[in-house]
Length: 253
Ligand SMILES: Nc1ncnc2c1ncn2[C@@H]1O[C@H](COP(=O)(O)OP(=O)(O)O)[C@@H](O)[C@H]1O
Ligand SMILES: [Mg+2]
Image (cartoon, rainbow, N blue to C red; front, side):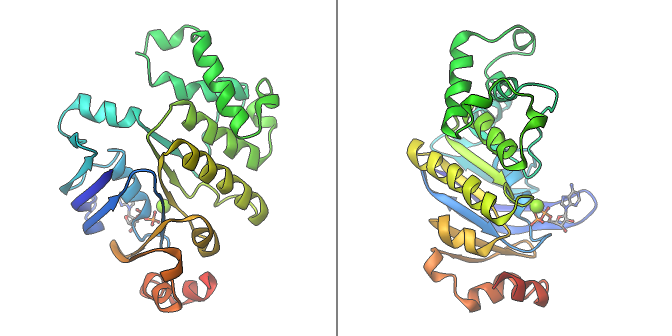
């Protein structure tokens, strides 16, 4: 279980990105964050892996307490937390396998990571690629893959880390609808199979409805909706999208 307790984030420029926020992410759940641009989704995700330190409040992980309690606690938390981004951040001139192996580097110190990784790590990386259907592309250059395939490599790289928690910030925002459905389907299936807690921000309400166990709707730094997909009514969508911009509410429906 992962939770945020009275977390508030004010950036140094004075922007209040998150107002005091409480939320619990139970183990193995697939959580979707919805909200317009600027609602605070990325800020919440960055708090959850300690990239942003809350101005107030705390992030608690399992029974280990605050992820910020010490540098080693933060490192341990990051090791068990995989990240997938909208822009997959692959290194184009490296092979697919080399990119996935980056997911294993977190296990080693800086010096050790300059040497070739053990065979066990390469096997783990290949297995992660196999699970996203790309084992046969292992030796291709990453920049030769399609957008959807590259995003799958991003998922495999996060999986190679063997995470307990997976954070994905708009992982399918730059893909077409059909590819989005497939890529998110892969992420959902793998997290479910491995009992990984997933927290995913999305723009597409239909994908949230399809995959989420639990949806959190953010607006202007507040969680304004929490519930299952079946509870995401038109009035709930209004709450999430209308306060910020009426036109986006229509787009979402
Ligand atoms: N590093 C930052 N410094 C200052 N303000 C930021 C920073 N990151 C985000 N913000 C602001 O915080 C608010 C929430 O942003 P963000 O968490 O990125 O929302 P979302 O991911 O829902 O679009 C916005 O007003 C945004 O401009
Ligand atoms: Mg964002």
